[in-house]
Each structure stands twice: as C-alpha cells, then as structure tokens.
Length: 456
Image (cartoon, rainbow, N blue to C red; front, side, top):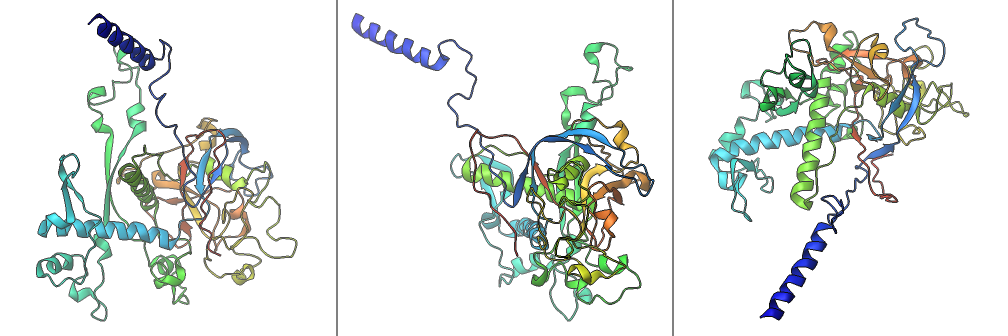
C-alpha cells in the first residue's frame, strides 16, 4: 500500500510539473498550433512602410488637396485586380439563395433549415440555413413554387413573359460595430477620472449593444448607370448587359455605390470565416474591408517614392509607344489605349507589387471620407478620416474618396496622388472597388504558394 501511494505521488508530481511549465511563465498556447495566415486567394502582400503621401511635384490645379505628409502604413493584403462582375455576382447569388432558403424553410424546414447540431444535439434558435440542399427552381411541388414565385417579378412587369428575379428584393442585412462611437471620451462631463469615457455612452460598459449598427441594403448593381451618367450618349447598346452577360465576367464591376461595396466586404468576411470555422475548425482571420486613402496610395506607388504613376515612370506610354492604362488619352481618342470603355482586368502590366489597374479602367472606392484638409488633422500612423453619414445629413457629409482614375478620365486623374470624391449613395459607370485584408503575421520562413486570379 505504501508503494502504491508513493507511486501515485510521483506520477502526480511529474504531471503537475509538465502542466505548469516548471513554474515558468509559458502562456496559454504553448501546446496549440501556431497561427498561420495564408495569402488570401487573388490577393498580393503589401509590406509595411513609410512614404511621403501627397504631391511630390507641382500642384497643377492649385487645389491644395494633396499637401505632402510623411506617414507610416501597416502591412496588408490587397486584391490584385478590381472586383469583377463574376466575383460580385457570387455575392448577389448568395443573397438570392439565402432569401429563397428562408422562404422555403417555412414550407419544408427539415430540408432547408438546420435546427439542431447532429454531433452535440444543440438546438439552434433561430435555425441555420441548410446550404447543402440545392434549390429546385423548377420544382413541381406547388407549395415550393408558390414560395419561389415571390422572388420573381410580377407578371405585369415581365418582358417577353420571361420569369426574372425581382432584383429589388435582393436585400442584404448585416451588423457592424461603431468602434468610433464606443471609443469617444468626454472628460468634461465625467465627475471622476474613473468614469471618463462613460459620460457620453448611454449605457456605459454594461451594455455594448448600443454601438451595434444594423444596415440593410440592396445589393444588385445599378445596371442603368451607363445611361444616366451620359444623358446624350445612346451609342452603347451592350451596356445594359454589362453585369450579367458572360462576355463581361472578368470586367470590373461598376454601378456599385460605396454602401454596397462595404456590404460586399462584410459578406466576404463572414463567408470565409464561416467556412474556416465549420470545415477546418480554424480561428477566424481578419476582416476584409475597403482600403483607406493612405493604404491605397501606398499600394499604388509599388515601392517607389516619387513616382507619379503606378508603373514608376513619368509617362503614360512605354518605350514602344503603347499606353500603360485605360483612360482618355490625347484629345479624346478613347480607342488609342486599346479600349473605348472598361477592359478586362489585368489587361495592362502590374506595378512592382503585382497590382493591376491601380490607374485607369475604373476609379476605386476607399473607406475614407473626403475632406479637403484631412491631411492636416489626421495622424501620421495609418491615417484615416471616417464619417458615418446619416440619411438626413447634408450631401457634403456623404462624400467618400475615390482614387485611380477611370476609362473616361484624363491622365491627371491616373496619378497616385490625385484625390477625387463621389457621394456614398451614388453608383457610377466608372467607379468600382477592390478590398484588402490586414496582415496579422505568420511563422517566420513560411512562404505559401499564392493563388492568382489574372485571366489574360
């Protein structure tokens, strides 16, 4: 008996040593797998760095919008091309299918809803959508057909008696946390320094739900943007087919306003993280979002300090006399650069960081709000000026920065320093977007194979 007690005590002692790290501070993850952030599909790595943001030469417009300022930017991943019609269409189809599944769940919940976890028996409230069960859009089940009929246009609005999805019903609802509101501090109203930061928070730290915002937005692009942008131009018969026709699959999506671009970023984040957590049990990665104005310019420069264009030179042609971007060259000869309107993404060479079309093709939304003097009052580390406009705010508060110039712009707007703006609730035929994912770091020496989505 004494030997047994001695044996158990020795085993217990050794076990306690192995679990405690011999009394040393070893952290909580010493036995867990090291975190690894792979290169996201279709994105390139942009390293951290410092540069002089703003005009490096004469301000030819005398606008004083781009006063030079030295800033530092953290590393991130960026889409190597603008988001294409086909990629944005995946978002639209996801919204369409999710709405249809919710409707069909009322008729046949055992097929279109997951009400309980098969492994743990946990009951979901509300139930999850069952994405493994395909939707039979031509089902012979009358109840199913009646439900799906609500997704289509009314008969009196159909063309040639064809069934078409009513794009007005493709609404995407999502939540986001207003971190700026949550971080506000008002020492003047705080009676004690320990209460500082709680004075202008309606429910203090006891209930953070007051900072959760809900947005519901239609996701289908404005396919008539080509017509209403140019009232007296009726010579573009294919523009009405631009978004859905397979000939334009790999052209940059247009007709998407700033709010729709932000909703796409939220969806892309949830789409990836839900896959990682359900299929691989991995921790969620950082979110996708629109680049800030400073991040966009740093990426567009491609590592060059004083270059006016993303390709690193002061000219819009190469040594063979070919134009290096899709814009409005010469005196309006749109065809001189190879295309009249938009072109397939990555048609022209990339900059030295592997980013295509940072100049021309379509202008790009950024997350930054536009203010003529924002360079003066923003910080010099990852600077950004943001403002969440309300519906009743004046239009001047709804301006968002666009960068890069488009197929309709002259060369000045292609320069990496040129700033322009558009209203966040306005869609144009010359504005698209690309997303970024902040870099969280990974193990030293890791160099995964990068997946590319260059189509030509």
